[in-house]
Amino acid sequence: MTQVREGKHRQNLFIEMHLPSESYSESASPSRSVPVRPVIFVVEDEEDIARLISHNLQGAGYEVQSFVSAASVLTEAVREMPALFLLDVMLPGTDGFELCRHIRQTPVLSATPIIFLTAKTSESDRVKGLELGGDDYITKPFSPRELVARVRSVLRGLGTERAASEVLRLGELEIDVSSMTVQVQGRNVMTTVREFRLLEYLAAHRGRVLTRDQLLDAVWKETPFVTPRSIDVYIRRLREKIEPDARHPQYLKTLRGIGYRFEVPK
Ligand code: CA
Image (tube, rainbow, N blue to C red; front, side, top):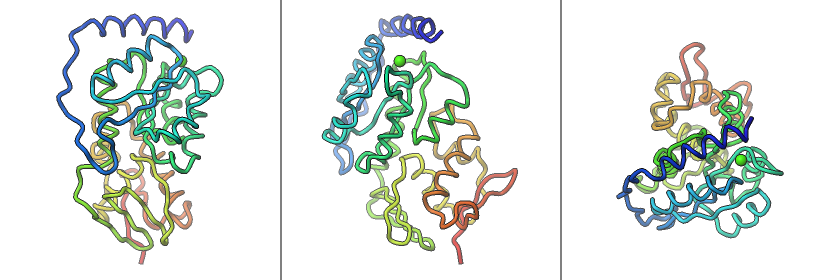
């Protein structure tokens, strides 16, 4: 089933490859947290697709390191510190979900953005990918242009264009917008880019009720696949990270049937 589907996608991809490619004029600006040519780790066992991805990402100004399996990805990543991982879900041996779990458990890599790439389209797979710490999810067949746009969007979420040292101190929580770090009672808490963006947005609008749609618009612009259900996944993950008791949240309050509100505990 998968073979057939992926085979068909490959054809689609080749058709796109021969179309005039869009030129990407946006240049990578030097910044503290993203190198001039960010390195992207692509883990994809289908060589044609991997080549297509590399070609397009390189054309967009990224450096690409390709892997056909999960085998040496972690060791290489610890050495190279890629700006982003693009993981195919269905890989021989360790699959993309499992690899994502390993990446998130590796302290120096735990905040590196991860985009999943897969032929699977079911809602439960999407949710699983997000629960494991994925930042985005692209389903095959995809257009190379869309892929590049998603990569850009996730990397832009790193907030390199922000004003320096804006720190929100709320209760026991410290949210540093410039370094994208979160501390709870002075202890560092690892978040993914999207988790951080969601927390930052809620905190910046504290006291206000925000609907799932508003949060989607604010944090997941340009990622049409994300559903309101995904917000719940992210909120749950954030609660586990920042709340003293995730089951009785003090910061991230649910307003049943409406959305969420950030509150500063007394
Ligand atoms: Ca595959």
